[in-house]
Length: 204
Image 1 (cartoon, rainbow, N blue to C red):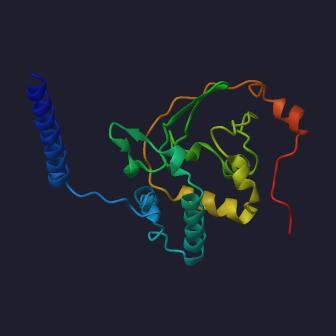
Image 2: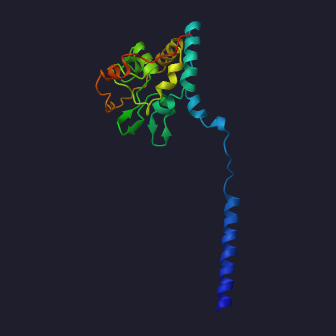
């Protein structure tokens, strides 16, 4: 009986090893992608500025495109889909961020007049990039938007970003308003906490 169990165990082990080897043989080969290709799809999704006819404005918009891509804007302002980000909508927003101090929804930065960036002035956009302050005085949570990273940009950089965003195609996508966090739900809280001064890159 013991001999039978011994040989049964040997047969099971041999079959298991053979099965595993067959699995390795028949599965398609896989490769680890080079690090520089990880974000290729989202970087390539950025619309070009080739349609801008004025050379000076095109150069400015190209600078803005570079800053938007390297700044990782699509990481937050993407539009989620059932199979991942919808890169064809680029910065149409909709991604939700739930934190202990509120729920935020990434804004639509495309040029649709009713749901996108045209509802904001150039200065509105620059102020958010400069100091993380919404037009109504609320401060966007740093957990959601790392606006401090962009404080080192110059005013020319921020202007270039705005120019590029204004030239993005119109994508209609209404996203819900965020739930205001505390204590910055008070429009005057920013001035009370930070003394009414926007952060800005030091003058050179």
